[in-house]
Image (cartoon, each protein chain N blue to C red):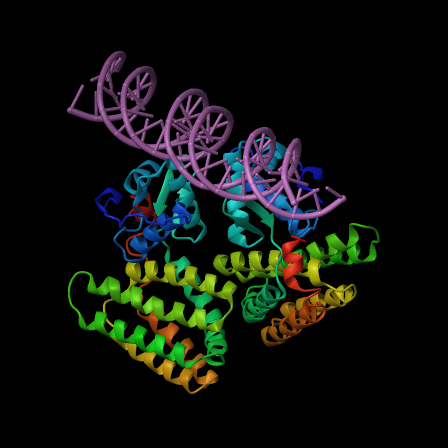
Length: 237
Length: 237
DNA sequence: CTCGCAAAAATCGTATGCAATCTTTTCTGG
DNA sequence: CCAGAAAAGATTGCATACGATTTTTGCGAG
């Protein structure tokens, strides 16, 4: 899969930062797995695709590299990250540490508006699960991540929110790489249970459910190295 | 305090990224409070000081902006961050959530080498506390942060380690801004107690001590707004 | 003397050019 | 025909240039 095969919506951006808009587009493409891990993202190509100079493209790639979605090698360029099983474990270890606390914080701040937003989110999630087709699984992973991001935004700590954005994005990459098929619908029901606990202000329960939920997601991964990591890395795929 | 008044060690960098070296220098200067919150960091000046073009200076500033140490405004430039009391609270809320878990992880991975490193670190910390002089307090804050960074590195999760780097850096800013005088020596003894628990593999105790330690640090802050935050912000100081 | 407005200066956002480095192709000797 | 070296091509790292935006300065009116 080459980046040149991708099409991206025009960068409207208006007066906002163009690099940021490009970063968002690329992040979506990576998280949706339209750009496979290991894909080279050359400054020139990115620039051409978005109709900006290499300067701007480079800034966007630098941002993604900070988020861990892109790995840059000096004088060689940027590549979509290809997280190792160890990295995958660290991503989920981080989530186990952070997200239960976020659930507790969010439980104390739920408003009716928040509940409505969660309901809408879960509806959409269910719709994607019901759907079939080549894009269904991608949308499903995306929507599932959005649930966690919504939770983080309700918790009201912008620093943790940003950490979660990074962790969710990396998780999507990991799931795309190492995920087995099933379980996602199970994840949907777990989301619903968490929301129920949040609605009732039962922070302890929400926190415990979240911890189990993360465990379930990670348990669905196959983190055994697939045929020697050295080989895969050597072939850059 | 102007950035032009600062002197920086030459950027050796060898083959490594020059922008990264500049970022590290600036970060140290900010954390040490040689650069006051609100100080303007213009691309041109930074470039001149480090003898690089604006391109490289800009990249360094972009990195600092990701870490939250610098705030950038479009078409206006970059400024040393001036965290609000609310931001300060969020920094410490994040640390309360993350660091006890890091302590637990570290407790399970302590080696004699690690213990030695901690001992050396605490020695240095004690030395700075004993010292008097204009730079003593800066060095003290820095060394205190280094204890937490060392702990994060022992925990063995590179993602959490990076989060901690950001949180510790932001904490230093917050302490410099809102810290009352005392208590730091108290922090030193708390570090020693934490190390003792780590050495004994008593992860629960280490975790609990860490939580209290963070509470104590935050309790030493005076987070009341000082004369209307709007005014301070308007005056950019 | 102060206020408001216009011109000048400074600074940022971005494109582009050149040298350095890496990759690929081509050439040569065995 | 193949291995290794040399050249050609592509890509990055960085500096610089120029238009756009913001800030400062200068000056005249009130």
